[in-house]
Image (cartoon, rainbow, N blue to C red; front, side, top):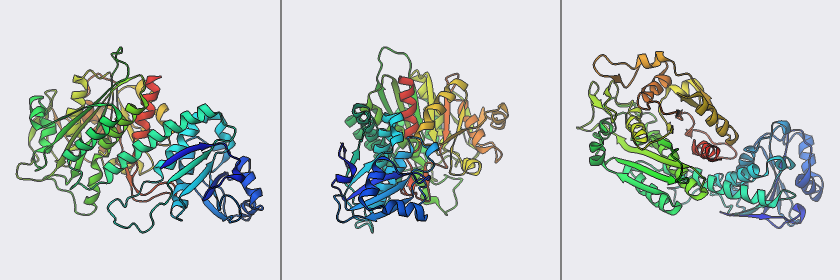
Length: 494
């Protein structure tokens, strides 16, 4: 998609459609007021009649065939007092999806006056949303029923500071492309998205972004002592890959942030096999790994002053003849032994060695992301991701950085009780602690492989993919937590 910034008066702009913001108070200002005057008050009439109420993402389309813009689309931004810059991503996404499904190729989007208070953030959000709004699930359809036609978007800068707005749009373009890259990786079915293919995708994207990458095989992992990771891989005919991406933005610093992502390209549950219903969704079980890969490529383009390593242990979890069995005992890289109670609790097994390797590389902070537990959906639904951490200062830094992105995170406790549940009678640990507190016992298991390094764990099982879409976004993979990763990196680098 082509994005550009223009300084034209909204009523004189030539485009297939002009998009203007409306709030729920119905008061029209700036570009919205000018456009309403051009269409003879039709937008005011729609607001006064209640046909549109300005709710976030709500749209109202008005035809204006005798004007330079052929259509006027009003998109709601909700309560004016509650406005935050990230809402402009949803505003732009709703515009692209609504107009794109109506066959309109070129559109112009105006910003509200509230953008003046945070021009960079608003420029970033509106560019991000225009790009993420184009993502569709139909990548395997020869002829999608309603393809999105929008291929060019002009942003009406108005009286916003030109340099600040351009800076924001540049950032938002990179973020939007990274989110869509993670979504494409996640939605690709597992017969195409094998561990080898995931590693190849990461390699190609890393080279384009100027990020160093190493892809290691099972023999390397064996020499490193990664018995926990390899225990999951041994049931599959597809070879595992251990992906390590490195960005050195501050060579003079000893600080190193590690991002560790679960890369299960398909999860049958192994010998503890899952029910057949909805098992097709287990192609999404590498969403954490996809987010790490996409975020690493984005920082290669953004070039923040910080050192970051991205680690993605990638494998399938299959019930083959060599598969790990319930009751087997495996040894992780740090020497801890693990009794495998349930082979469907495999994500924590591969993350264990990923976290150990992050420490071996000298990580001073670690964030992991995984579609780890069904229990998190019971706890938080699909509204937020769970956050568990061993360091108050670091988790508060993460939460503060993530909040403006629009991704929701909720911190949960890490009491010693949960670690007690993970003690085994025969080994150092067991990989499940029963139904009670499943999200938190899983986090307690991971804690055993972090050591004293400040660490934040993100369980995104309820947010990495959704069964329904929104006006601004298709259903399916969401790209969570790419935005939060990038926001944290920028916070730490500043």
